[in-house]
Length: 482
Image (cartoon, rainbow, N blue to C red; front, side, top):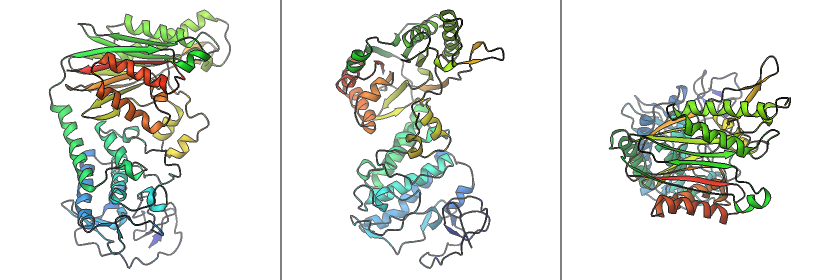
């Protein structure tokens, strides 16, 4: 037996860690006895053996999570909490049945965590004294959620959550999974116990609903009609400091295909202005209707760079200093909403009461998460909000001339269902609708759910962001699908 240099676990395998699946570089220390563990039944294998493989299909991962619920249910029915779920100490049978190898160190529901053994990455924050510090059924829900996250992403879960305002990154940052999985996983691994599913039954019901939602999107009847409305405002505090609205919007529900866009001009520029870049982007999107929306964003980028050269032909500064804009655009045709975006403008979808962010921000902090940084490290980046993709991206060629860079817009096609509600928004609304970053999405969801019309929703979103301070220009387009 050897110990892993990464997680410190004593392993029976001399090549790979039984817990985290990493290859051993060297022997670190002698292994300790594991007398409290039951023997692995014949024909079973450790659940951690799956970690030696790449990420598994999300459908298989949900089946594993559901099997873990079944294994824990007898413990919870007795009024106890396991609070020490470790993939190395779970045996999986050939029919995906789970056996918990450690069942002699359990805690009554509601007890304080004092002195509990912490399983790095899989223990809920309350196990190591964060939050309320009491062990409850949601404590085990967190562990199942962390195992699920590991299975679908192929990456080790995190454990540096000293700050409970942090959150697990979306699985879609690092894995190809349905967007319906986002809100389910996020709630499972919420750092505050009261924000998770409160029981195994709640978790299982939500898991099955998630599976059903993916099926409904893939096989259900698409929406056939949209109602749309938009709203924009300079922003209460922003207007006082910089009295120009540099946002631009498109809300065109035409008979031959609808076009929507939220465009946010970048405030500071050495040449030109964010408002000018937003206006150029809007003009390209409207005038090139025969082109895919992704191609139009690349054309818009080139147009902004060319406009910069006209405005300042002798500009010899850093290419990042020219005018720019972030944009999210959507085209609606035959039930499909085709999205393309650059930067941190966002699209949210409200479906069956759950809000999910369809877009992924293009900024330094998000890129760090996609590269494997922990949420804590990503938040601590000195320039985490720096845009990494935007309209107005330029480089200098070998002769030193300013030329348009390859901006690589992201794109996503979404089948809308009757009852769906969608908002395209510049970053001002999610940034200012709540002082608590974690409450922004619930606030947006509540407004979308309660509004009687797209117009009422759009106006209320802008008003709420102004009530929160209005420190940026505020623009959105709201769509109701029928």
